[in-house]
Image (tube, rainbow, N blue to C red):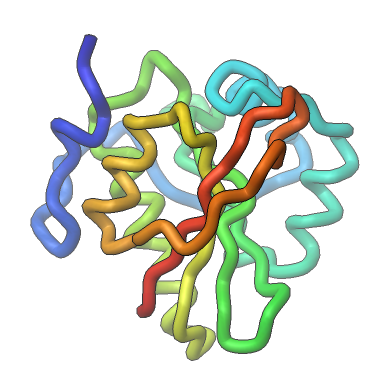
Length: 165
C-alpha cells in the first residue's frame, strides 16, 4: 500500500506538475462530489447546507482541486474562528487522485492565503488511526497539541495539531 505522505514533496520544494488539475475556490454545485470525497476519505456525512454555509465565512479558505471537466477531486476547507488563526476543518483528496501532489498543492495554497490574511497559526484535527495523514501533516510542520477523546461521530479519538505560519 502506498502512503501519500511517503511520496508527497517536502514543504517548500517544487510541486509536481499535473496540468490537468487546477485549484479554484468552492462553488455550491461542488457539494455532491465533495460530500462523496468526505464520506470515502473522512468517513463522515454532513448536511449539504453545511458546506455552503462554511464557504461563506471565508470563501478564499475553501479550495477545490478540479479535474479538466471541472469536477472536484480534492479540497481543503478552512475557516477563521480564533483571532490570528486558521483552522482546517476538512481536507481530502479522492482515492483515485492521491499521490500526485494535489494535497501538497492545496496545503501550500492554503498557507499562502492564510499568510495573506496575516494569520499566524493553523490548526486541524485528525483521527488518531490516520497514520498517513499524521505523517503528511508532520511533514508540513504540524505537531500534536492535544488528544480529543471521542471527537468523531463514531467515537474515535482525534488529535489536535497546530503549526505556526
